[in-house]
Image (cartoon, rainbow, N blue to C red; front, top):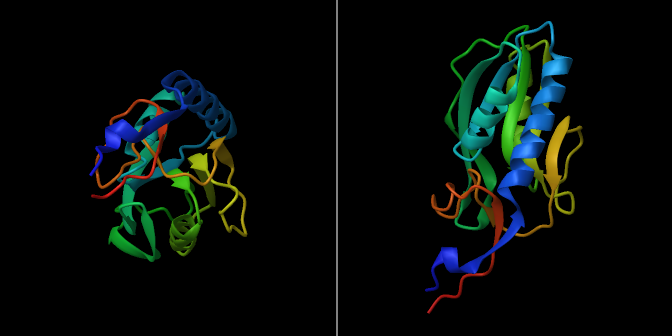
Length: 179
């Protein structure tokens, strides 16, 4: 089998990612200037984006994490399983869900609905990547870093079977040939 690192094509450079994260952080900081929102990072993929976003914000905020699974390898399983719930009380709080990528929309819809059940003051969504050609959403995404084609991508927290998260940019993973 070909090695995944041999099948990478840069889609978004490290510099472009860093610039866009700072722009989104500035916008969030302006919107919540007099508030203390809580960021809900979706593990494992969003942890790098979430950390960089939080460090670039210049307002007080809190953080918690939720973990779900919906993928095996490069294939969506079509269902979402809750692996770790948040521990914070988000009742009457401004919640910002931080996602690495929205493709079909299944995961973000599941998490958004779950957060809304807790009675927050508001729920907003920020995603680094959006695949508009395949996303089926009936609600808005407040902040989108980049719209991308429906290719499988890795890097900046996104993985292929738990590998390649440490790449500093975002890369398309070409089809891996099996022997």
